[in-house]
View 1 (cartoon, rainbow, N blue to C red):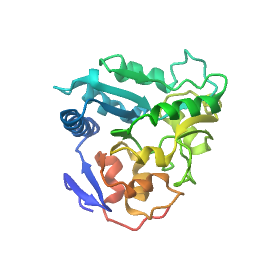
View 2: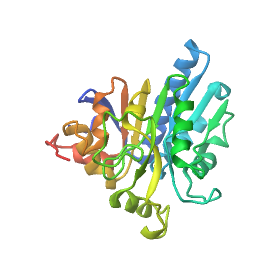
View 3: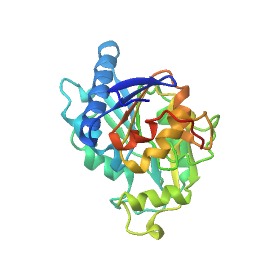
View 4: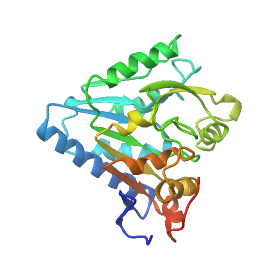
Length: 261
């Protein structure tokens, strides 16, 4: 793959920007166009957001998008740690409030609250997600190829919408490398997550993936086979998925080499 501004790869639309900020702005513009298109033909939009530093530039750009009636947009997020205090700044709901939810006048924001019974919380959150179709999913890809907190090997036919999962060591180390936690021991070992089928049920998926740490995962997800050992490879199954990369995350695609998870 040459570094064209945009191209098609295994059915995915792939955009490569010159910088991380440019990538975020380009992703925000694409997502904004999708929101406006949905609002022209229907009463409201239902969106799912990932919470991670990799999404910061895109979310900042989305806050600047014009002519979006956010009062007609309902927001969800795709995962949440177990075992953190409700007031912990590392909670994904808290991060999203700080980054986007408190800056825009959404119709409703549904935050995941694991509470004292995470299994019941998963069931309750799934019910809210399943009340109507999800129009837009904004996601990233983990260093181990995960989607949300679906670490490898992921279940591509999972019957659940939201479930409790254990986090693998690479996933937890990423949280330290992203400076979300000071040490590995501080990172929770389990979480609630939307499953791969639930994420792919979104009508449109926008995947924003910056940084050299994601280079290998991006290569495996976009060039490799659809394989549970690389959960993000399931994006190849989606008919309306757009990938946004910067030069660092896209560098593993340069030679269009074969990839294996």
